Length: 324
Image (cartoon, rainbow, N blue to C red; front, side):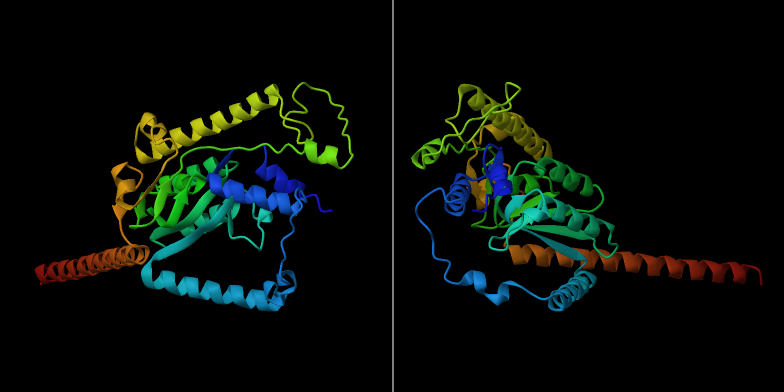
């Protein structure tokens, strides 16, 4: 049986910047995948679908076409739209082809590329995420905020920026919501998996030998101890303090105001009223307006250069004339 140890370590006994329903779905997946229940879902032969895989040449050709399209769009609009979709994880190696995910390392690479690209004048993070891992989230948010000092970055909520997804949005220059898009869930959640009864039912007894008082904390092979519960609670509270203070700093609000949301979720105009978003626009309209603003700015700059060139020519002509 595949152990899925890495997936379990990302899911259990860790602070997560995600919504409770997302955590519940992940736990249900773990129950099935790790054989923790008696229900097995029929995959319907999807695993054998050859469309899930590409040979190297086809994949590279597809990547090349996407890059050409991306460059053409940037040249025309001056705006680069970077997707931030699905569950947020720290590294790309954690991605699963069956679930839409965004890695912090991949997002950082795309952001750095956009900042360094002279054709890109405005960056848009197209966010549709319930959040995810707390590990690496605050470091990425700090990088996004630093990048806003170089180029404007709009957090476009299309249509969900909850928990870790909102942390990313808050770090942007501004946050745009639509009538039905939601932000918030500024809270931290963690779960502990106790599989001792399952092991007992299988007739298995686990004996653990360890050195160091905290080495066996949060073990899934026994009921959670008071010490382990305290450790997990401290981790959650530490992450919550980081979350609320970072959002307060990015949004120029008092920490008390952010804590007062009690991890609530807000949509549309209400999100603006509570200070978690800046303006109300549909996603496509927001991108169109940003593109128009860049186009206007380019035209003004070009006009300014041409005007300076005309003035320079006129000044030279006047200087020559005065010598005659």
